[in-house]
Length: 97
Image 1 (cartoon, one colour):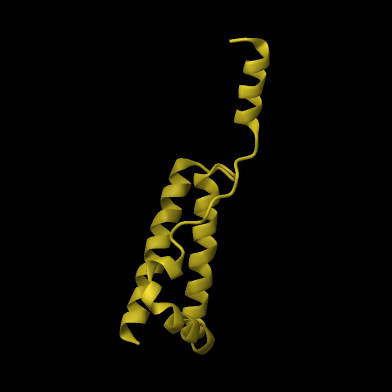
Image 2 (cartoon, rainbow, N blue to C red):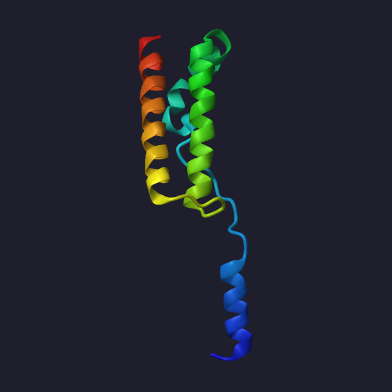
């Protein structure tokens, strides 16, 4: 491979990864509950905290998965577990309301 192509390949690898659409957003996970989630965020402080915590951990996981802010594999696994716990609690509240 000519040097000019190797340099271009190296620069492509070193380039900051582009941010992509963050998967697992609650609006995608529970599309039929968007209005209910909005109302609960306004009326229930506990739900609002769960909602905000879920989005914070989801964004952190996405940034780790896309290597924008890499983390140790074990830390990423633990964050995914935390996201599942939050999502389960959010679903429990949505189902009970």
